Length: 279
Image (tube, rainbow, N blue to C red; front, side):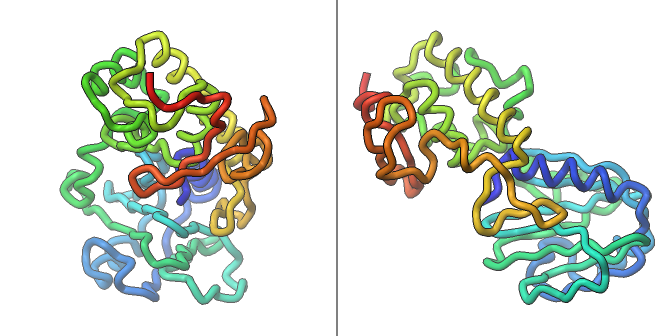
């Protein structure tokens, strides 16, 4: 699933190509992809409107339109937002397309979990996408701090890997970069979140920001279904310390990287560099 660096890359790309572009027409190929409102109202709401700026909130893309309405997109597992020449053959997994003056935007989604929303002018975003109201602070927001993590984790026995994936704690952090941050912090993913000292959380906080910044600079991680708006993969995968490297030697100590399932999610770690998982 695209995580914060991948969604941020798409957001920055959309801000390079879409502002000022007027939506000439819209086609909803898979009606179920439109989460709100009904497809006909969705088409009517967007058609004829110029795009303004885009922003990212967690893993959501939010694009303003000239009348004060908003287009929301969540890529989920396999979603892509592509900026293409209208003559480009239509991919069989294209779900929604909107034609602008210069090119055409297409929402392509193989697994069909992705969603799009049109939020009318004056309607709160949270009224249409309730999950937005429960998101925690962004990683680069001062509200996300070691002290905040210590307060949220106090007394918690759940694994730190699970705690970091809780979008109510920090918005946008996902499986790839939680694995990477825990490795670089020397923390086993099964370590109870509430057992971590403030000193350890200071280290973890700094590494989370470092890992995310590096991946954004590399335009995200290369995996089979992620593309930026021009159809290009990211470059972070070749630099990964542990993610998807199960069985490979640790880049620091040479011990084989292990993979375990924690709360239904794959976790990659070095048993030597990251200890046993208990304080």
